Length: 488
Image (cartoon, rainbow, N blue to C red):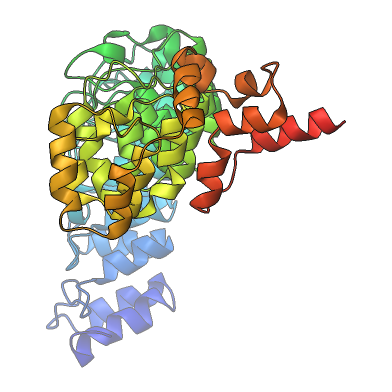
């Protein structure tokens, strides 16, 4: 819709009917300034003619004095519209009549060379460059035409701009580079061209100086690009204290193939503590994102990731009990812990679901005396505390522990009081003695006990089948397997 009725005459009888009518309108009523009349969107006749490729009408308008650099309310110029619509004859005409090839041609500072690069119009790009368009022009976000070509995978645009001398290591305001954006978007051929043209894979692409193109490729799952970047990227990002290993990026993106590619190339499965993502290791990130399939967890373990009590603690924190049990089966150490207070803190919070994790921990050889501290004794339920005591000689506890238990029992159920004053059976004491003679790794695998030259009932007793049954905790599959094999 046009701003006034008179201006409508020029657009209706000029642009839509033919260039001869433009001359008629302009000559018949020179008192009206039809050239400057605009629609409510701020478009003048030249904008409409340029967008439609009516180059003869454009010629008449320009010769009549139309401004080749007029802008709409969205700051769009006729030059930009001609480029956007692929009207090269109109474009040439506008340039001959003084259209500014540089500067902003639309909102956000995007100009005609940006648009031509985005559309991949090689002929228009070459024409704009020939007419003096700057390869390094930036929009409001610091993005150049070369960056645009890399972002949208316009290989021919990219090649022309590189050949014209455009900077392959330009950075947007957020420090992203063409190589980074091409790696992120998965444009393999563009990445290859950029690397062969001198793009720096070690140019950090964010304000915190940790993100590189290799991170983008790993996170987005672009294995071919990752394969290109691994041999060219400096390994300082792998374990540097203020950096982030691309292993984290692969885990975060959930891309097993990328993760294995990095680890096979020598990147560390343990990496460094990652403050950016808030994880102490890739494994901590992995089990939260991959708790169902264990695919990423298994890959990290396969390449030597070290499990520790923090992994168990975070399993309790996020109630990933299946992962907790899995880590124990995979040999997570249950002795010589450095972060016992943190573990107990999460263990207390998870004690309401103790049946899902505590039996597995204690059967794996964890010393129950480590749990029997004030925070555990004072906070957990009677059932949880009694279950913990089942793995001890509760009549021979250290004096401080005994005092805390007595204080707790004085205001607890009769069951706890009865357990504390009762005498452990001889068979239970023998069980404790036999288990104490086994190595930690033997206790973490039920198969070791199942293979002992003992009657099945005694092997089950060593595996606490009586306690598990009494507390309605399912016995381990390994026990059942042992029974089946013996029956066979």
